[in-house]
Length: 357
Image (cartoon, rainbow, N blue to C red; front, side, top):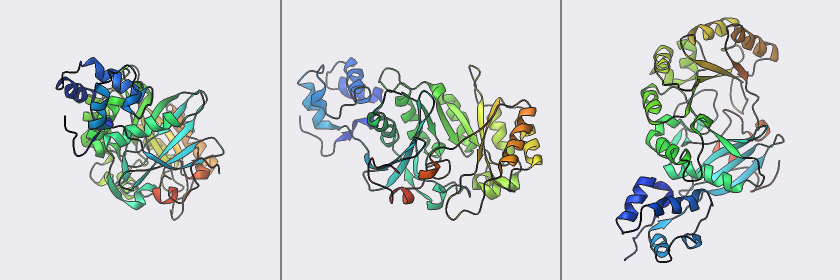
């Protein structure tokens, strides 16, 4: 059989589509699971290494497919153990992902777009604008490639879509990637309760996410009134707080799950006693928990981090209103890997692969 002019990256295919491709060539459908396990569980990059696949099938796969990896151009290691990966894509563009060590596992913060169009005033990623969406393979590869790079036995068990980009603005590729990421039969097999998708508030996609997936939802709220939120986050002009929270009330929550509301605390902007009280009232109808994120500074930004007394006072007001409230201790700040600090322009100037800060 003649080889195609351009091979297909097998990571772009769904299991169903790949099964159909095999059946069209009179190959047993169970082979799809075998082959994909070699890729995702055993981390092989060549079809000829798949020893339980018939020898006449392997060249056929080689003729039609590639097994791609992202190019790791740089890794920076923080004093707290966080690792910021700079990945170079096939078209020369770059994205960043951050591996965060927890007490007994790793969490990986992954990107969904090159840059971001949301124009949140406190976020460095937004300053470069949106360049393009990531493909399904580019999203999945961040997980596959970081797992392959891990050298210790502590598991990578949690994923957060809180890197570069607005995940819900790249909806189809996001959901296709999540299907692979949460498929227990393939080797990635992340539990839905350990995967969180964060959005700036793309209201029109919230119902879709609740229908199509069983992952956790996080909302980047960051203000308690529309004038302030519109000044901080352009998306609020299209989807104001009332619309956003109404959509959250209808988001399906099973098994005791709650929506996480992320609130970046900015000095003298959204950190007052009145703000804390309003936040408590706004979230009352929703099963929710709150992550307070003291602002992580970056070059050229006008905003500042509140002092510790203000942060703790804000938290106490919410706790007194019976909310679960965490103050997120941002890791990786010394390598610009904390929330709101990802920027490929910074990463591209970083140290070489594997060098420590």
